[in-house]
Image (tube, rainbow, N blue to C red):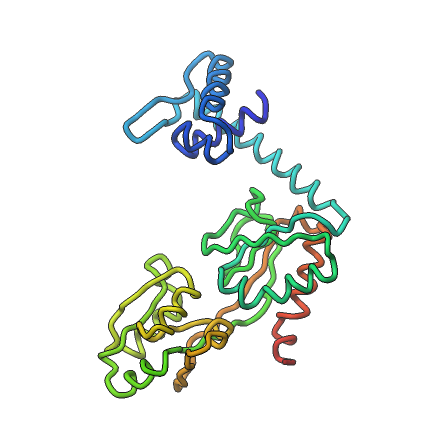
Length: 289
């Protein structure tokens, strides 16, 4: 069983179709079908069956899946270890974070990294989705929640302050008639965030008018007078035209965590970036400014 065939098998099993597997792996549809046929010939029985919802595994396919995932784990472990032992300060460094953190907080760190080490190429994956570090979807991730996955090295990097923001017109309306003001929130999937409960509790008369996973989008809607919004201070303070509204108690702050897979602990370009991030972003560093 060849590794390339195993990759295709796993992509079909996870994507539910030859077309989705081809898209994920950037290969042709006929190639996927041909390699699955080879595997089925080796197994001497079908590995998938067609349903109205797409391809699903047969009993034989389930058996192959367990073996394929074991082979994938070994291949990924080898890839991580080879990457982690790369001592030269060059190559792509894949970084995952929310868009606002990458643009307003991490950007100076990456500028300094490339200034010191011009052969290192940061690749930022700006997304609210939590990428899988063990599958090398990213080399290092910055999050507002600790990591729970196994074999992840993590540490608390900094404490992020939040503020309540509004346009000048919205700020006046909030003072005069709170019921006329809308509130901008995280979307349903992030409705458990503490800042959502905070703003709804303190401004019960304000109606919900807009939600988004992106703090950057929230800030722009806030600027355009759609309503009030709780934003990370680096985002809200950077948007010209937004006012930070003083409240008796500020919105809850959040810890920022950084994590990477244990196998990458010797990757020099990762270590260089983490050293710079610690120097520029740690609580002691930001307090000094």
